[in-house]
Structures are given as C-alpha cells and as structure tokens.
Amino acid sequence: MDFGQYIDPLDSISQRKDFYGYEGKDSGLAAITTLASSLDYTSSRSSLKLLLPLADPAQVLNVPVIPIGTLLAATHPFAANPPYLLSWLSPQISAPDMLQPKLFEKLVTENFETVPAKLLLQLATAFEEGGLCDKSGTFFYKNHLSKSNVPVLAIAGDQDLICSPDAVYETMKLILEPLVTYKVFGELGGPHFAHYDIVGAQRAVDLVYPCIIEFLNHHDTA
Image (cartoon, rainbow, N blue to C red; front, side, top):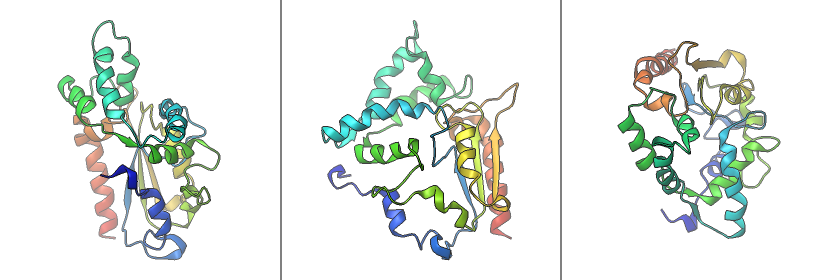
C-alpha cells in the first residue's frame, strides 16, 4: 500500500452515503453485526487514549505511518516475562486464560501492522465532542444512526479495556430501539471477554459466533 496516497475509508463512506442507506436510500443489507465498536469514546475510559499522544507529533512531523506492530512486538517480552514490567498490556488484548500462550504471543508479535497516521488522526476525533467524523470535520457519523433501517447486533466484551460495554452502548442507544440488539459477553464467574477474545478466543467459537449466526440468519430469512 502506498501510504503517501492513503485513501481514507471512513471519508469514502461519507462520500457514498446513498450506498450505505443514508438519506433514505436502500443499503441492501439485511442485518449487520458490530464487534466491540463505538463512534464516541468521550464518556469512556478507553485505553485507546494511550495512542492519542502519537497523533499530533505524527501530523507535525508529517510521519506517514505509526509502527504499532513493531512497538507491540518489542514490548511483548516485558509484558509476558518476569518481572512483568509491562504486564498491564496483556489485559488490553485478552482476559486471563482466554487465549493459549502461544496463540497470544503470535497475535501480539505477528498480527499488528503499521497504522497510517492520517487514519490515527481521524480516529482521534472519536474522543472529541460529537464523536467520530470525516476528515472535513463536518460529517459526524453518529448523528445519522437514527436514520438507518438496518437491524444491528452490537456485541461487547465485559472486560474490554479498549472498547468497553459503556462505549458500545453510547453508540447503540442512538439506533431506533426495535432495530438494535445489545449483547455483552462475559459472566461474573467467568469466562470474561477482552477486546480480541470476542473474535479469537475458543469460547468465542462456542458463545459469540452462534449468536451472530442466529441473528444474521433470522434477518436474512425475514
């Protein structure tokens, strides 16, 4: 990918509003599922705020990408091995005992790539008044959720420190109530779900995936 000619995917969505059901147009979607997603983090304590200090220097220095993957791979040994100086990083990804150690290590050291600085700058608007907006700063996505007629299953993890259940709810409450189903995975006595457990943990196969399939199948045949 040529990051020098990075095309903002969120901005391209706002430029093709008719395709996504904006302004009363048919989206062509029977139903959708969101996984640990929010358009507004202003009221949450999301750990994504840790990335915000990288945004301004990247803009000032005109840095094309932020090497998130390299940074995580470099810090992993300090989080996974004694004296566990960065042990607080592990719960950002997975709750205890949800991912096998080798799978967890592979996820951290091989899964994450560089992040375009322009994308990071735009995602930073999710922590500002009005929530996530396009690069023009005039189109706020959450303001148009109430215009959608597509059923949504919004899934959150009970121990997600990146996108907490509260952050998910802040977005989903803007969708017309008959259309939205809000589901938090995780029980008081376990299992618990952090950010990547919703997708990658074995318990996700047993608990999360069947819920998604049932929801989509129900609306696909409705």
